[in-house]
Length: 326
Image 1 (tube, one colour):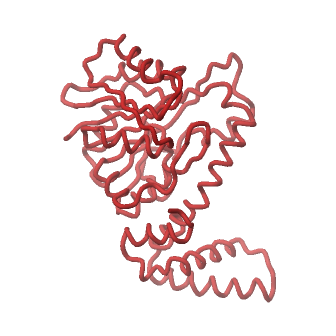
Image 2 (cartoon, one colour):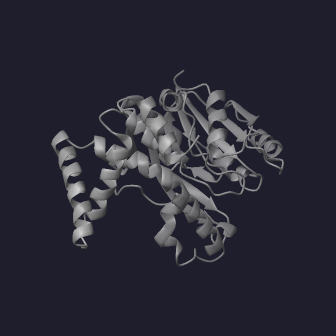
């Protein structure tokens, strides 16, 4: 059904869901656009569900709203439950600390409804907090790790970037089910207090493998409310550790995408150059700016045997085998 489903996955979100829902209620959406709000309580222990119901009822909105429970912890599982509960063709994954600009839904709907090649659509984030002072000095340099800032300098196709952060992304439901048919996410996302990540990048990679494009639009603006305890160096180190762990899988997707996007003659050159560089590195060690690039591409070629891996399902099965994910 044509419309947009907002899916908000929550774990112990009682202290931040109120503002998130207030911004959703303030959305300026044309009457011809159908939409709904789904809260997925990912096994919280702080009365998130009760609090969400109470907060929504205060606004006396006629927008369909429901809260569902997903006992299997992990952001990927929570989102999957939200998708199963959704009615509409477009899915908006709004984090429990994302404050969407008032035209977010209408803009996202218009873009997705007019360009069917776009599989996943993303926006830009702005950091806000309860801190009475400025953000830590180190924050500006790493804000992208918090889904803050711009993925690109201006609106446009983001497929070559290979991923968009999950905060505020919009995805076609058809694509979502295609991407996960017989192959659940290999990365589970955040689980309770565990800062695992990468499920968004994996979803973007699967979208590209299925022939869809990624797109970034400046008009899609949201504020990312960041609690003070998430602005400590201890928390940031845990966050980065989660990113690095997920990269051990994501890199296989990205190497594969890099390879298949090359013309055939370039692929042959990559293989020849890779072999040459590997041999040369043993004979005469040297610093070459592209040495490691060719080495990685060669390893990817050897591991995936690209000529024989010609179907989406086969690709994912190879990922599982090579990375020892089950």
